[in-house]
Structure formats: structure tokens, C-alpha cells
Image 1: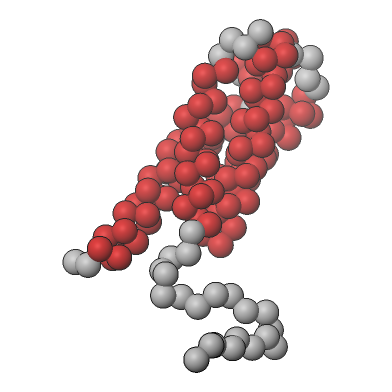
Image 2 (image 1 turned 180 degrees about the horizontal axis):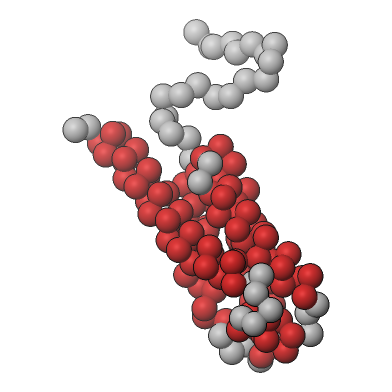
Length: 140
């Protein structure tokens, strides 16, 4: 197997492992945000956030995971999760004096990995993208 093929398969495996791990983190947490009796309901109340905000965060988390599963828009899903985790960091810093900030490190790392790898072209042999009607001139 040539080096390019190994790299392509390695990148694909890393993307999907990251996607599955993010789903394992965010699906249960996103679903739990819909429950008025969950720990998330108490935490958001403690931080002074309204109920609608907690539910919105759950929708964004579940939507982000759904987008991750569709390669064409996976980067948008990663961005959604990164924004939520950035907000979680700010919340922990502002309300909990930085306590629990490390709980976001793994999801941030995984979402960054998926974002970066999904942005890489699948092969160095692909031509650059062109706009409709645009021509490419090659120097001879």
C-alpha cells in the first residue's frame, strides 16, 4: 500500500473516531439538557441561565453531532460544538472560578481535530475548486 493511501485511510479513521467519540459525549449530554430534573437543570439554574437557554444548548449540541455525521457540513458541526464548549469555559470561569474547566478539554480537542481534518483535501491530486464559468490557465 502506498504512503498516500495509508495517509488517506489514517485521516479518515481519525475523523470518524473523533466523530464517534464526540457523539458519545454530546448525545447523552444534549438529551439530558431537555430534562427539568437533570443535573444540567440545576447547574444552569445555579449559573442564572433561563430554561430556554439550557434547551437551546441541548439542541445545538445534538444538531452539531448530526452535522458531524454528514461529511460535507461536518466542519459546521465541529464549529457548533466548539462554540458551546467555549461558552462552557466562560461560564466555569465566571461563575465557578475556573473549577471544572478541564472537562471541556477533550471535546474541544476532538472537535478541533474533526474541523481540521474535514478541511483538508482528500487527495493532493484533486484540482482546486473553480467557480462556474471560471477557466484555469496553466503556464507552459
